[in-house]
Length: 105
Ligand code: HEC
Image 1 (spheres, helix red, strand yellow):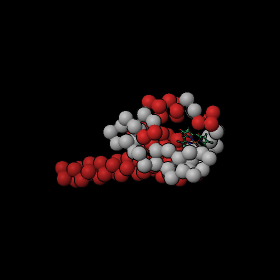
Image 2 (image 1 turned 180 degrees about the horizontal axis):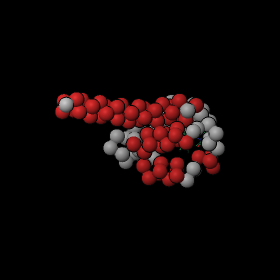
Image 3 (image 1 turned 180 degrees about the vertical axis):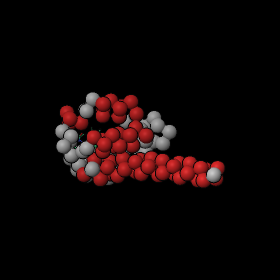
Image 4 (image 1 turned 60 degrees about the vertical axis):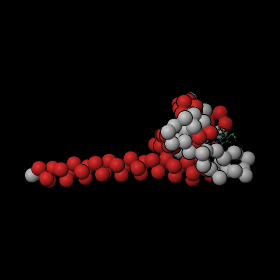
């Protein structure tokens, strides 16, 4: 009985880890594919990497919906997508413990 309980706990833990990993990659995928559909190295709209800004700057950017002043993209992204992208950018911001300097191309 104890053993069954242990297996159950392990399975729940695995699902939890899997969900958090897929959510993280989801944020990255949205960033690369959707933000990257406009932001491109050789385009009019410049490419950037998460480490372009510090975490507080990203937080402010999303919290105050600053993109709206550049271009309204609210029709192109769901609330969850914006949430996942912002979490991804904050997790890899300049002052994070995993700064990501490689970004859009
Ligand atoms: C429909 C096209 C489009 C999409 C999609 C888009 N942007 Fe932009 N973005 C723009 C334009 C246009 C500007 C203003 C021109 C510029 O600054 O290069 C801009 C400016 C910015 C800026 C400020 C300038 C800079 O490079 O620091 C940031 C930050 C930014 N966008 C982030 C994002 C993020 C994050 C996403 C995805 C959630 C995104 N954008 C999706 C068109 C887009």
